[in-house]
Image (tube, rainbow, N blue to C red; front, side, top):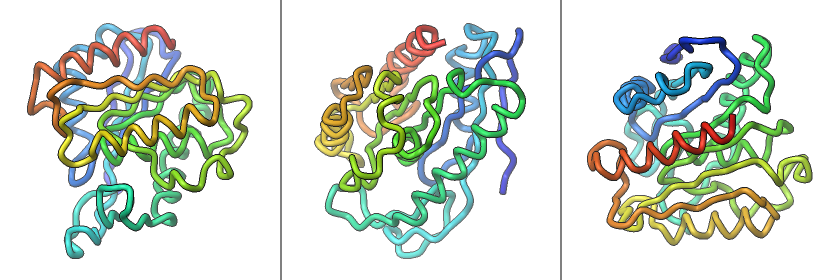
Length: 229
């Protein structure tokens, strides 16, 4: 397992943001993106952790090996989902949360998030972990195993006020916005009072390929983090 890339706080460390990349990517990509948009400098109390997923064979890509948090059979609501590998990815994310709490950061001062499948892991984890995180920020993503909720929801009553920001482009050609909207419906049906779905007009499934869109999205993330912590 590749060691995560970390941006350490320039001030007193009182909060942590753990962010997971998308399929066939590495943590360093988002380390560079966050630095480019100066998020760490404006949040001097926050540690940023960017793990890299293990390499695995991906069913959708005919068994091709690439970095991935879980196996993927397709990027639509009718595709088969690999529950075992999704749960394993969630446990992996929780291990980073546990490491931060052991270093004295309260779980309510820890934000989890990610892009695409990384964001999917974060959304799944906030529902199935026993912890009430400080917040969730998920970009261009969906809630996996949606049909298992609300039955799979753990400690739901103490999570209803967790702030969750879900950003998505309405021209996303990989994760169609209709799928993301179904995730929105699921969260709202479970009574999550601070779940926010933010739609970006004209944006495809991208991080920095369309810098103007990503800049707007990152400003939204920055403002959300400052309000959370």
